[in-house]
Amino acid sequence: MNEWIKQNASYNKIIISLFVGLLSFLALQIYNKVDAMPGKFVGIERYLNDQIRIRDQYTTDQKRMEKTIGEIQQDVKEILRALK
Image 1 (tube, rainbow, N blue to C red):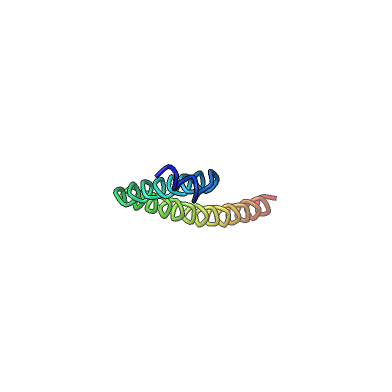
Image 2 (cartoon, rainbow, N blue to C red):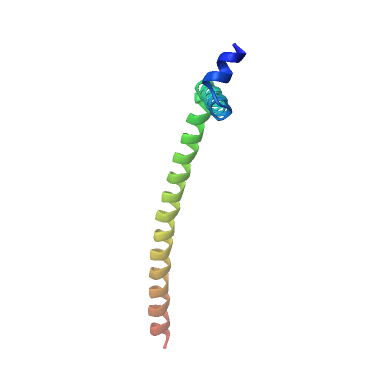
């Protein structure tokens, strides 16, 4: 076996093969972890969707407040004109 390895493979090929094997093993481990915990990723997706909804609600509320403040300013100007 040792002689066959010496004749048919250089050290670079062996190192590359071991590296590819290690990467494959790590990828499989990560895939198995992700597959075992789909609830965690569903939770993350739900959290992100909630954040988007909150941001949209904040934007809507901000626009309403700006409009209301503008109306109040107009009313104050009219009151001040009436008092002159």
